Image 1: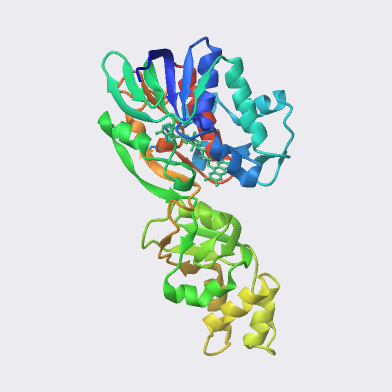
Image 2 (image 1 turned 180 degrees about the horizontal axis):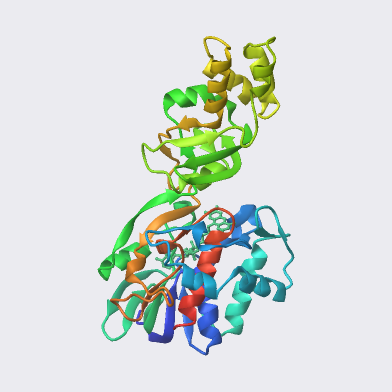
Length: 391
Ligand code: FDA
């Protein structure tokens, strides 16, 4: 069957967070915009985000909440589209929200409201969204022309917003990276981030039967640290502190866990000569840690004697418990993909490729990865708005 060629001022591939924001900003400026989405519905990740309540931004968003080979790259876009801009949009649509913790803003009711808000803004801005549309091949001369399952599309400005590799079950594809490669654009190697970590068989034998136990820790690698909850899982460790530090972890690197941040764990033993034994140590640890974890740690540490020196050493060890993960649970469980399109290839104010005028990359496909807590959506909104205002 022959299809007509559809022409637009700008075409965005991917109707996720970044793509929809970009479409809104470009549409509002009078551009004829199409968004082509492979899945049968737009914004699937928005719907499942934040446990169904979408942690849509973080009021304490700062450039150092992001990882990138160039830590300065994200600054310009983040400064021009701030959490306040997104909060204003949320308020305009009457969506009730609350701060959960550490500046993280969640919908009171459902992520669906954020998606509906973006789709309403798209409709108001005259954006056309084509779902279930597979892009086959992109040709570039003065324009970009491409064949899709819905016919041929043509545009002067092509925005790649196809996201990262995390959660392939939900339709994540490597398409964005393939396009980058087609145009000779460098890619910083990708890796799963904000991802649960696995432990070696030996470490798992010591800990993993405690799956479900969670406690406050500080997890650190070098000078980077996160003080949040850690959760023991059937395969290793998870919880916010571990997800956060996983983005900084590389194979064979040690993660130090402070199991009693800013707390004295065994100090009471030093001043009382009586009751210097494993039972007393466990009961002191239980004041800070869940009982099963406290008992297990004492059983694992088992000092030969309970001298002052041994107690002090153990206190230090609990504040700097070294863990060498055996790996991560991979893209199946990763909230985001770190690495991606090299920011050296892009303009930090417009997200346009320096070497391929008219080609833009936004959102997670770019080598900018946020911490847990609404920062990844803030990057999607900010990079989407930066490109949308430049199209
Ligand atoms: P996103 O993945 O949102 O969108 C890409 C779109 O492109 C998808 O619709 C996809 O189907 C489409 N696509 C792929 N290949 C294509 C192709 N070949 N052609 C056309 N379309 C194609 N972040 C946060 O800040 N707060 C939170 O609460 C959460 N919660 C959360 C939960 C879970 C379970 C996950 C997996 C992730 C989060 N995140 C998050 C991260 C956040 O979802 C993510 O960073 C953003 O969705 C990235 O936005 P993008 O638009 O770049 O990609």
